[in-house]
Length: 136
Image (tube, rainbow, N blue to C red; front, side, top):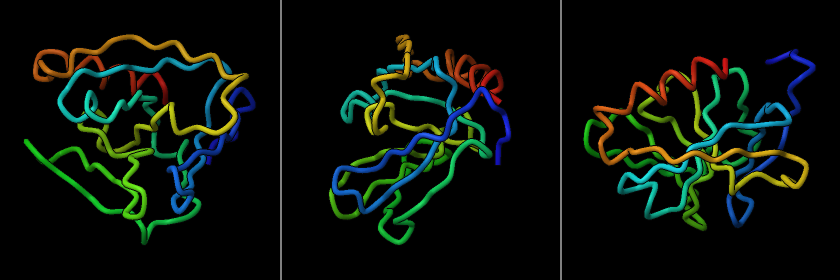
């Protein structure tokens, strides 16, 4: 749990609401728009979080997993609606990546989205790992 007053717990979830989570976020958030095969196909906008700033509220039993390539990333999808609202990323296997598009009530959240070249992950993956360490 985080006790940092600069962070606010914000809810989110999948489309059908079978899976719900909370993420502790500052008022301004750095996010990445990755162009790798899975992120480009799903429109995932990454907000990288350490373990203690994420909590699953509902739907653990509704999650289905998918792994490919190195098998490090643990992609989690709602088995009801198919939406991936969060997952364990390859760049931060001890933390989480939350999909900015799956956050509730984000009107007052300033999200700064930067492109990330995930197609060439081996060359750029350390950049995401660095961002996740800054977020801790």
